[in-house]
Length: 259
Figure (tube, rainbow, N blue to C red):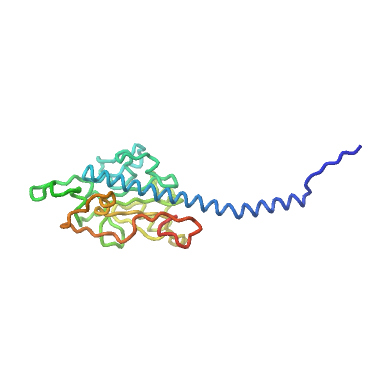
C-alpha cells in the first residue's frame, strides 16, 4: 500500500515568499517611521522637562547650575572647573538620569552662560528686595564670552543640544563619531556660539542637531514666574521654543529641527 503525502509545491512556496516580501516591504518603512517619531517625541519631552527643572533651580538658587562632567555619571555640576559645557547636571536638578538623555539614549549637551551661573554681588543701590526674580537672570549683559546663537542679535542663558540619530558630537566622546559639517563640528566643541538651523541631509552640508535655546527672561516666564522688572530690557527670541514632532505621515509639515 503506497502512502500519499500532501504538501506545498516549489511554485506555491515561491508565491508565499513573494507575498511575505511585499508585506514586509510595506510595513517596515512605516514601523521605522513610527520608531523615529517616538524617539523625536522623547527628545522634545525630555528637553521640556529639563528646561522646567532649570527654571525651578534658578528661582530657588538665584543662579543657573554649571554643566556636569561628561566623564562622570553622577550628574553633579562641576563648580570647581566652572564648566560651561558638558552634560545635564541632573542630580542637582532632581531629575533621573534617563531625562538627561535624548530619545536615542545619548547625553544632551548642556551649554550655559556662566554669567548666570555666578552669584551676583548685591549693593545698596540694587538690593535684592526689589527683585522678585533672580537678579542676574534679569540682567542684560554683553561680556566677550556671552553665549549666543549665530545670526541672532541677543545672548541666551543656556542651550540644550540633541546630536541626532547618529549622535555626531554627543558626549562622552564628542568627536568619536565624526561630525560631517562645520556647523555640527562647532556645536560639538564651542562654548560661546551655537548653530541652530533646519535639519538637512544634504551630503555636502548635513545637519542633524536639534538645538533648543532660551533667554534668561523667557526661562523665568516659562516656569510661570513674574517677568523681570520693566527697567531691564532683555530681548525676546522670535522662535517657538517648544514644537513637538508630528506623526511621520505628516512629514511635509514637520516643524523645524524635528527628527
